[in-house]
Image 1 (cartoon, rainbow, N blue to C red):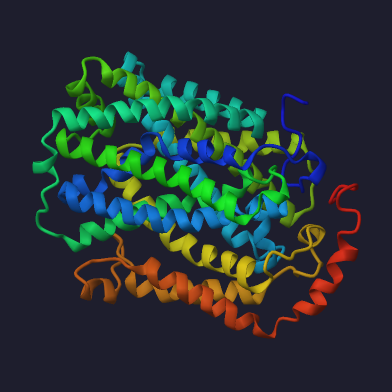
Image 2 (tube, helix red, strand yellow):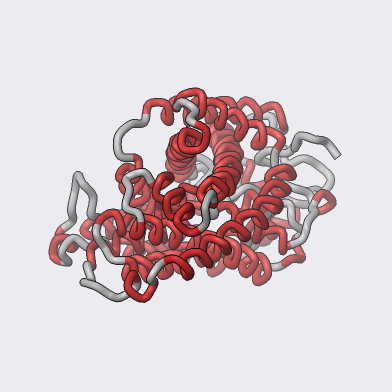
Length: 468
């Protein structure tokens, strides 16, 4: 087996499928068990919401976002394709650029945050200056992403057990050293802050949807939808909710604008020197999630380029795309300044707005319209059965996004409904059903029988010949 993954955005033949469905839980447990997730859980506590209501918001938001994310993961074993390529049937060969470009900005934004958190961690641990810390961290993460799928999976499995042990000790320490009864006593319910935290957690978990099936596409098709959903949900929900609650607890007990410092201080208060171990454990997860982001963004960039001009698929284009997204995220992280946590809160809010219509349309198509029946080859044909532009998906996206606007709550714009609700933002709960129902209504006249009849011929030699 080659050390470096040779596939990129192309189809994974059944003969190359490998692994167990249970391998998904450590990937997504560690996908969440790191410092960026910690920062997500501290948002409402930093804003003045008490720990009780913050904890409920974290758990509720994680449930909503993780359900959607895990549903997307089930598409990987079934189709054997990266997540973004699977958007072509809903939006068109070129129309899918809409969500891919948004996804690229998401990847780069997350990695800029991760690299800044890594620099803060290394400064706290060994006093390393910011710039060399960011560069060294980014290079290490890029190496893991370059090797690809197998190394990422192996690293996540090892780190998952290390992080479970660290989180278990931290949680035990909280019970032993902190008066949880007093900290968890319900205080004033502040609906705006509660909803900010709820949808920050939901948006954070939902953001994995844009590449979640990249890490399940090598699994055998027979693992099925139910098993891949449950293993992904359990890993992502436990890792995400647990780490966000740690962030909320650390922020409440040891208020500090730097969440890394708050984590170390809270852990040291439990057991002498434990803060150092907690930071080291979290730092490992930060490396691998940055690798996941670099890997996913390289595939997304290839998808963008391929829609504009068909390209040769394989390892060389993936490495070239990896170099581009590496340079972009590194440049942004070196330029970041100010309150990172505040910037991250705003970033998560934008993610909710942009990805809610896409996730609703993609899932509606997979589970209710085409019910998993797609031509793999047609997804790589500019003039194939899915067309260059799909007016149904694009229209549903615009309608769903427009329906959310009155509910927006940002620094630049507050919608009339959000104002009437005292600044509460419930746009995600509006965008999901509006986008899905609009798409389903527009697909009522779609000639699925004719489309399905062409699939056997189009994919006749799929398992023996490259898709391009």
